[in-house]
Image (cartoon, rainbow, N blue to C red; front, top):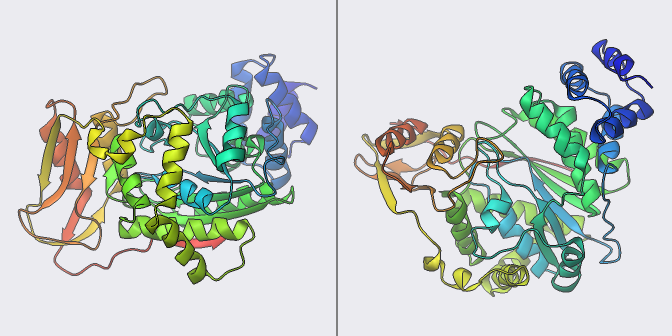
Amino acid sequence: MNIIEIIDKKRLGKELSEKEIQYFIKGYTEGEIPEYQAAALIMAICINGMTEDEILAMTYAMANSGEMLDLSDIADTVIDKHSTGGIGDKVTLIISPIIASLGIPVAKMSGRGLGITGGTLDKLQSIPAYRTDISIEEFKNNVKEIGISLISQTEDLVPADKKIYALRDSIAAVRSIPLIASSIMSKKIAAGANKILIDVTFGSGAFMKDKIQAKRLAKAMREIWKRKDKQICCVISKMNQPLGYSIGNTLEVIEAVQALQGKMADDLQEIVLTMCVQMLKLAGRKESKEELEKEIWEVIHNGKAFNKFVELAQRQGADVSYLYDLNKLEKAPIIIPVIAEEKGWIKELNAEKVGKISIELGAGRKRKEDEIDRRVGIILCKKIGDFVENGECLAYIHASRSENIDDFVEKLKSAYQIVPNKIMKEKVVEEILL
């Protein structure tokens, strides 16, 4: 095969064969196809799109580029959960121990945050000594013995995706639904779970900016999974404002622990209950939504969900005394209130602006190699639909240094829009695709 002919074929908008896609993935991963030719093909895909068959071929070629896990010896159902990203999204830390405490094994490999969206690994590593880099054998044993493990993606898992994602990022070819779908699903297929729930977010703080794009992506991923007779549920959810009250790694761990003890913001509660119910249904539970929600609240109120999170953390090396006493977690040295200068109802809280502020504070990365400060972030006091008095606190900024702090305060104020007329609180879940 000839890579130039493959590039030209896709440049003309023609469909690539499975063998042509496999040839490209293998050649680029092994270094036989140079960067500039790979970039040309990726850009042609970004511009001209891919058919369902092409997306499926791309996904499985990438999944097969490295290690493929088999978790079938653990249980008939092993479930995974993925989010396309958002601001303040600490949902994995909450729903994974809930589901595991209800007897459904959860096996998840997560990534680090890049850009305005946070990463589950960075949040987990805010718990002192938590190990995300355990071996595959230990990962599988944890799922088998305690019903849960949350770790980092191994170096041997989907090496093709690592190379292609870095290339896409460098040539402005990230916003391509076929490439996003194949990237996400190749990792999920290789990770070994047989059932999956995916939260596809849209809005100012999400990768997809509108619901139409989010549904297109969800349908592409659903088609990949269903082609192999596996069960999937996609939840389409809004990310126009941050989820919950905290943004920042340690701050989100604190909120997640409090949620596991029954204290949840309304929007966080809505998404947690929705996803837990759908995960239980994926696992074969036939009860009504109301009955399943009752069981979820039961493991929260009786402590089983929190205890499962502690068990997970302890199993992976963490000092769990920090989970029992959240005041022990290291806090930012500077905490500044952001004060409202007018009264009214919160109409807008721009998640993208809040995410960018958190990056500037040091809570996230602009580049993969950047170090993050797990202490810093933002605690929101007011969200869309809340009333605020002139002089009342909108939020608190948690910073490590006083430099530019006044700028951060003004930028966070500008993320809010306050109006005189009453505004209703927004629902988070827009649609569920089975």
